[in-house]
Image 1 (cartoon, rainbow, N blue to C red):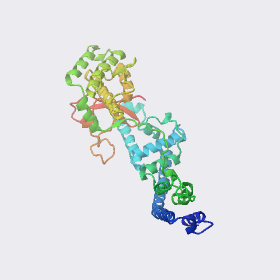
Image 2 (image 1 turned 90 degrees about the horizontal axis):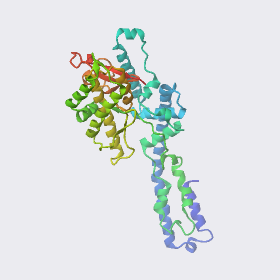
Image 3 (image 1 turned 60 degrees about the vertical axis):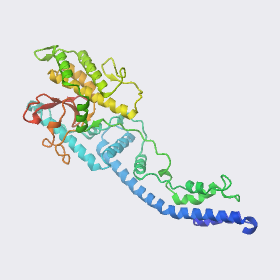
Image 4 (image 1 turned 90 degrees about the vertical axis):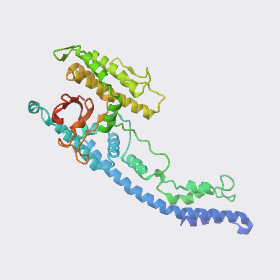
Length: 417
């Protein structure tokens, strides 16, 4: 029986035991007819919209589930993560690469190429002693996603695909509750004094949007996957221009370092380097806009910030990241200028500080092409910045700015994992 037939039965029950003229006033009958007409029109308008949404949602959800399964199998299958952590990672990878597996594949290929470039640039003695190891899929994922192993989640493929589907299509909000509320014009919660109420009307209208309950209401809560901070070469250049220390300040730091050297070998202890970083960091924090006293340091020399701030959280987080990036860059430049960038004491401090620094995208001559030795724009590599080098992060050290070939001006100091 149709939903309109059901409604007719309800009307029949309301007037059982006598004629309409005997049981229902003309005014009440007119109101009943208007409500019946309103429900009829709502149903006629809603059925095609509900059918179209249901079809689109079903197709998209199946597609997303298939993509998630492929990414899990290809990029997370050999990891020690739980199944739910793998699904969360696949969801994040797809989102970050335009929801296209081919974009993830290209990024993975580029990461492998960068690792190969670094290996080929090493001396022959190094290559004889060390075999080239291509980047693994697990390492590739770790260069982009930061906290998968720590996620507390029971996320399923169905949860992830539903979330993505609702995000893409929007919710289906044309619900029976909407028409019932609009038509509730009589006696508070009851539409008819003769017994029609919201529960009855929900039974009548429910088949119209059957199967769409999960596409409306509150969105499912999914674990937040943290990304490795990445900035473009252009952003890095803009930050360097705005927040870098002037030449006089850098010259002073270089002079301080050189005071502790003999025959070009720095005699500074790690504690000296931590003190040097602190001096530079305080200068940069003022440029970035932190108030005096907002920045402090741990016993190990790492910068610390208070939990709260008067600034909006998003802007505060951006300012902190700029601080980390520029303090580190100036710290490295000082060590380069003093020819102390390769000393164990400097490295022991620099490698620890590197964890908070953004990874800069490798600059390319042609953005439409992949990473290759001939497509890297070596002129735009920024000394003191960190780049993703295959499965590793490398600090770019410009040691010979006057070299004729830009490719020969510097090297990458790989940050240990």
